[in-house]
Image 1 (cartoon, rainbow, N blue to C red):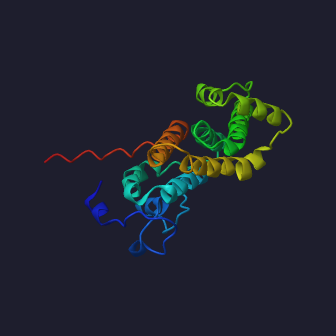
Image 2: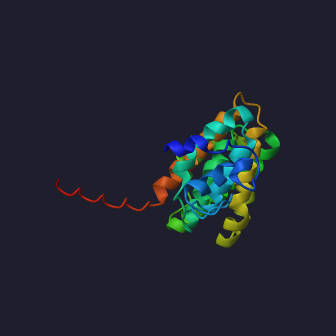
Length: 218
């Protein structure tokens, strides 16, 4: 990173009026992207930004500032392709499902199936579980059966998925991880954010860098 990043605000929870008061993950992204100071910058897909804000706010104080090194990797990941929403929701729900408390598992399993169904619909193929989803569902077989019965009776619209189902899946997943009886929820949250960023980088083509000018002969 550039030397000026040595003077960046320390990451902390919530929104901040200006850098002097601190920054959350996405506020720092807005600054580095050259945008107006905001926790909802245009440089990042809204659902990925929502996940980043949730991870920022639910990571312990001793580990939060380590997230700053991920901020540059989220800049430029913006798209209106609904497959991005479905992929992020699927990554979150399938990560949280095996570790979340029993009372949250049905909603998470339904979220897994809804995201898989939406991806299949958008790609014009039969709905088949990805290996990631299959592994998650196999760890909660009874809940998986209940989720399949529930999902057969519901068919969500694309608009409803983007506005409600996908954001709810992300929110529920982060809460499920934070409240799970696992040794290091902070690390699970960080790994989830890293994986979601990698998924988006795979799906969102970034512009080629501008060619560097050829130095004039001396």
